Image (cartoon, one colour):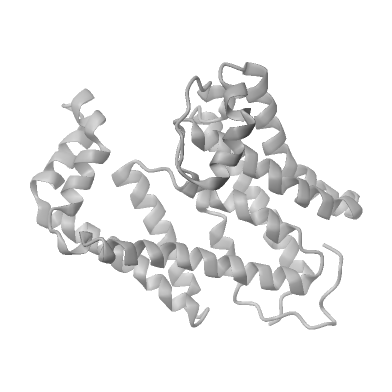
Length: 281
């Protein structure tokens, strides 16, 4: 079945639902920029971050309550405006998507410079505006598959890295990771059930190593997606399992990557024919 405009609208609707569901989750968890109230930042060693830092924008936001609120409002309003434009003003759709790209880049760069999370977990917000810019349906199809390959590479490269770095050959690797990841919690909450659980895993390196091996094999399994879309539903389930376990076991927040699951779902549709393709969103 070829991809149609109906599928594209479904995709955009689901994207907006995920975006605002995650917004509500972050708001309830006190993780929006105005709630974090950043007073310091960490430097990242990459060129794009240095370009942003050279503007001094991240320093301007420190102890700047109106600036925090302004950034949150702009970032979280654009997907809604984009969706409304599809129904009310189609001429503004691509313009809003183009605007979303630099806004998302600046917001994510600033947000992740503060002690709020890693930039890797926000890659969906960095790349999806490119997909939303597509005017023709065939361009949307090609960009969707391009992002899908990036997502697959994201997982496979993580598994390969564990092999290249030798972690997969060290039975104490996961115990060491757990000790480093939860060091502050282990010290501050010695009687907590989660502390006892982590201590148990550290004290039983064979069990924690099996978890590490399982995560590596799960990541490497995404290589199947480079050859076929037949197993995309299984990969979507594996992705959800990975994100959930990362949160429960490692306390790492990767929920912001959930929009990538849409790529696995809609990649099953074939290249739209000239008859199905149009410039309307």
